[in-house]
Length: 117
Image 1 (tube, rainbow, N blue to C red):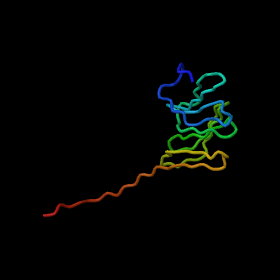
Image 2: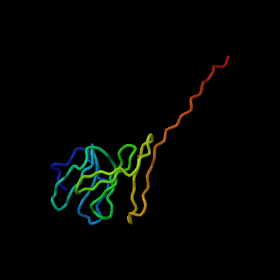
Image 3: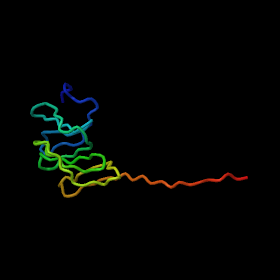
């Protein structure tokens, strides 16, 4: 892979089923094409993209939302939200029939302690 044009800190997270493209993230979603040998920024935000088996669409996380990205038209479709919680992890099964998501939930109890005399 050429280093020219690579976004600084880019994290590659998925390889397309046909082996022709990589998808990753760093301040947005990027693809790398082995055919054109170029990087392309598809969104300005989002993370942990994962290719789907059609080599055109990818799922990605955007804070509290799971989104579908059409990499040809750059159209983003929100699939669902877990607000006010945050999504942290995404994995898609090779057959695209299931996926795993991790949801971050922060809960806290406030306790009042009194000093012993």
